[in-house]
Structure formats: structure tokens, C-alpha cells
Length: 230
Image 1: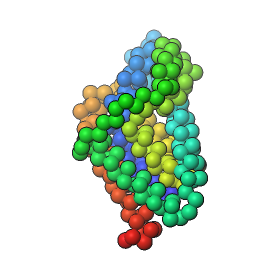
Image 2: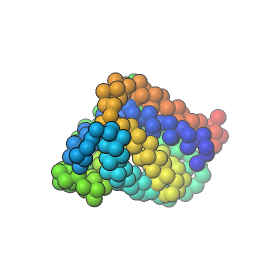
Image 3: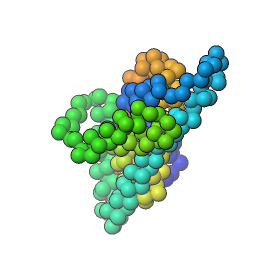
């Protein structure tokens, strides 16, 4: 991937995490945080935070593992589904349009509701999450993160579209790993500054939506140029 595309993905992922992930995954983070080991001496905020960090990192490692695996599959499928250059750029053009639509929906420029989509495996994942949420050991948190990474999510779908167009399975995994890593900081500080983050959700969501639209338009332009339409 080109450097400009990589920087764009990082920016979109970071702002999306502040605007979207805090609201969607914040409840899970707060729930398991409440069950973590509480040191007897919490007079030092620094010591308290440092004692909690390994648990948070393990949870996010689980999420990023799932994201990377999904990205690997999406990148592989995208690679084998594009046998010729013309067909490839046509598919990338369609993906670019879908990226723009996703960005406009995230920014709430128009309503986009997908009804009736209830994957059969969803209930099993939720049950597994409930079981691991009750214990919150390091192993349980890793499994919780793995499950969380498999839940239906509009932002995840957006990045999976990009992973499909990434050109290879490894590039697809890289795209999704970037998303997982960039979603980590906002959720790490959620317990410390939840009120402030909630107030900033809308502007950050708007920034991420504009970035999504711009990236989608860039993909559309590249595809049209490659197809010699413009």
C-alpha cells in the first residue's frame, strides 16, 4: 500500500474509534474493567493504571487477532476474485462507491438501515462473551476480544471492503490490524475520561465519515483512471 493510503487508513481508523468504537464497544470495556483485580493500595493513580494495562492490552490483542484474520480472508478472496486488470479495476470501482456510501451513512448524511440481518452464529458468540465477561482473567479477556472482533459492525465492514481491495491476503490482514491497533487508545482511556470522550463523539464521527468518503472517492478516481474512463 502507498504511504498516503496507509496514513489515510490510520487517520480514519483513529477518528472512527473515537466517534464510533467508544459508543459501540465502550460498554464491554467498562463491564470487564469493573471486574478486574483491584489493588489494595489505589492511592497512587499511576500504579493503579499500570496494574490494569496488561488486561486491556490482552483484550485488544484478541480483537486485533480477529480483525487480522478477517482481513486475511477478505484480502485473499479479493485477490483470487480479480483475474484480469480490467475486471479488478471494475470491482475496485464498485468497492470505492460502497466506501463512499458507508462514509455517508456513518456521517448520517442519509439514513441507512439494514434490517433482518441476524447471522446464525451471533447468539453463540454473545453467549461465549457473557461467559468470559463474568471471569475477566487474562485468558478470558483474550477470548472476549476474539469474540468482540467477530460481532457485526458497520465500521468493520468498511475496513473489510478496503481489505478486499488491498491486493493480497497479507495486505488485507495489515488493513484490519491497523484498524484494531488504532481503536485501542480511545478505549484504553475510556474509563479515565468517559464523559469528555462522549461529548466529542459526534465531531470525531463526522471527521471519520469525511475521511471515509474522501478515501472512497480516491479509490473511485484511481479505478476510473486505470479503466481509462477519465
